[in-house]
Image 1 (tube, rainbow, N blue to C red):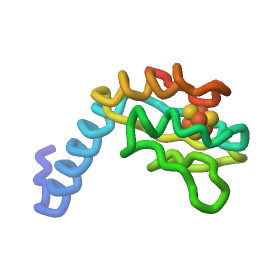
Image 2 (cartoon, rainbow, N blue to C red):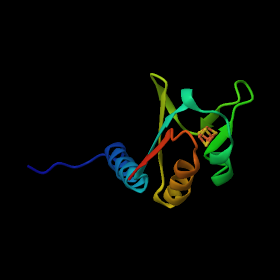
Image 3 (cartoon, protein in one colour):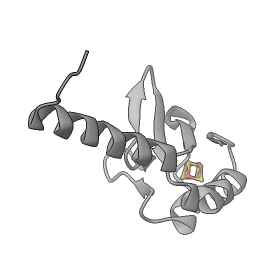
Image 4 (cartoon, rainbow, N blue to C red):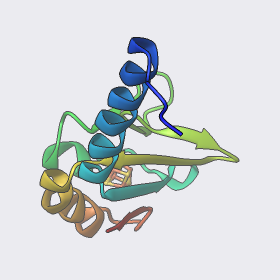
Length: 100
Ligand code: SF4
């Protein structure tokens, strides 16, 4: 049976393809246990766009992180992997996990 796609359906398919390709580029997962942060600033020094010290409590924030039960998670591009690994390595309390 021949089925013709409408313009709106074609747009939905195109958007899904774009989203899938964007998701493929975001291959790195960051897990951040914020409660134990001592606000030493070491992670901020590695990547100011990803880590920021909060003025409220002096602890670090994971930019783009989504919190669930006190644990923050975010996805990042593959290009950021090295900087994230440096942040994880330099964190004195080892509360940054990076998975690829
Ligand atoms: S390096 Fe670790 S302890 Fe220091 S501010 Fe960053 S997350 Fe907090």
